[in-house]
Length: 275
Ligand SMILES: C[S@@+](CC[C@H](N)C(=O)[O-])C[C@H]1O[C@@H](n2cnc3c(N)ncnc32)[C@H](O)[C@@H]1O
Image (tube, rainbow, N blue to C red; front, side, top):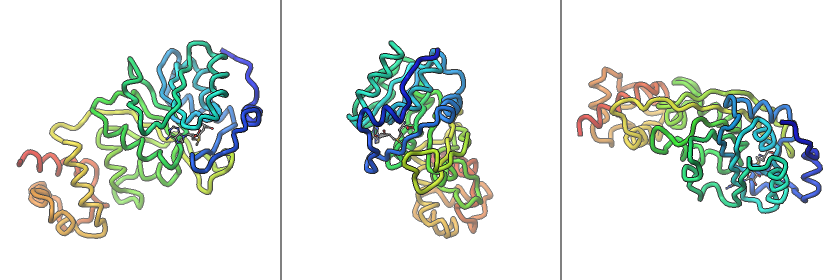
């Protein structure tokens, strides 16, 4: 459906939406780029979508035009009238919630499983992402399509022995498949942030048998808390961890950054089996 809407820059001007640094506001105006982001999760026609931080509604436009039913959470009350106009242009497709996305139960907003699509505010992006990954499994979301600083995106998709490999990679990969869907140049944003960005797409997978999130979290906190140390030193304080490493034939002189996601899962499984 093609709907005639004023240019986004005009919306910004009309509603006095000067970008707030405190709210992590870096807006996207390039509708082609926004359409490409909205295509990352696949066909959204009739699908439910959660968008966090719609701002003036650039990405929201693309999601609505793709036929999605969008629930958007925005903290900046100045944006609400602009979003209301967008809702009028797409009757019945847009629900706007004014509030802090960190304080809202997202799962409870939907009857089915929504795709989450967002150009996240950088200051709360990682906290939201970790919360979505730590939800009960299988998760309440169908997929995540999220803009991050490039450095964070690299940490999410990193493999063992990569510089960016750490806890976030293990948390993101042990029961999901994250990939970088597209890099986004800093000049695409208004105002441009200091760093480059990337859109990450995450599809949930199966939880490996016998592996508990809590154990994996404790294990990776210990291992990466002292990432330059050998496992035999960094895991010394975690009951059962070193015995599990040795029982699995993993060399305890290795460092956390060399241990694959699959190996961390195996260690966590053996620790729990021994309890
Ligand atoms: C990077 S901007 C993206 C704006 C718009 N989606 C775009 O792509 O141009 C992030 C948006 O998140 C909003 N925001 C910041 N913190 C928030 C929070 N805790 N909960 C909900 N929205 C928040 C900001 O007001 C801003 O509109």
